[in-house]
Image 1 (cartoon, rainbow, N blue to C red):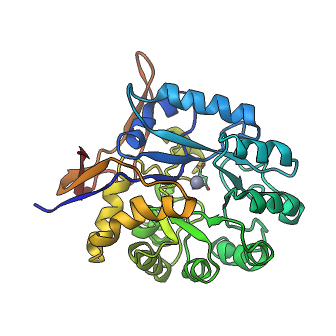
Image 2 (cartoon, protein in one colour; image 1 turned 30 degrees about the vertical axis):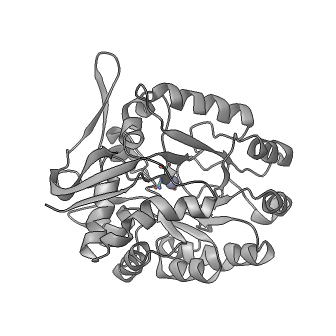
Length: 349
Ligand code: NCD
Ligand code: ZN
């Protein structure tokens, strides 16, 4: 039986939602991850210091007792973002980073940024104060094919931005193309890579009929991109780190409107590990999961260790969302019904 002991990982891109969903899913992350960057695209996006403080409080209240998990809060940038509020929030350790959603690029992004150039003054202050900028890198121009939106974003928006602000700490989130893999390495920025983009290509959405279980944004691309992402994630290179982009949607909504997002937090580590094993790169897993992120963000790595074991692990079909008495909804996890080869055994001393 193969085992692996690594420094406890962090999740550098996570959706925790609110209310009952938050209460029912947070333990999947808090049990095995030291910290997570929490995305601000809640129903009412987190655009103020006050909003971040109360969202963080609700996350801490939802944690299992004695959990030491640390949620790292982000500010959702809009056309009206107040520079003082942003930088103040960063300097006072309320915001860990700012998140840029181009308007209408993804779930709950209707308040996002319409014209990125309008934020250049803000980026200048972020660069000066060392505040990281996390980017959902897709254009929303309806004339651009959905499968090309990341590449076009890189050419139209990210490339000029990175050139103009060479010291700004930029993370291109949930990259999906070989074009992004190359851009990240050549431009001294960071990137998160999700487990699902390492496992599926765009065929998954069309297998056996339209299947929204595999629909997320940025949408999975052609196989050659998946291969490039696997190479990047397992390379051990400093610029690539773990960001699950776990994005739960209740089954009824997923089935009804096919909303974008894959819920992978119950299986994220096992899912990544499968890929690292298949690529003969288990030795680089700790870098990707536990070291490259802290290094990029200039924070210490976690102190605890986590023990992972190679043992068959059947993944449940649905996770229940319950209130005090009843099941009020279900969420389908990534790899539902599959048997993965890895399990997380627990915290090792
Ligand atoms: C995310 C969500 O549901 O909040 N969806 C997704 O497909 N990844 C938003 C996002 O990160 O794009
Ligand atoms: Zn996301």
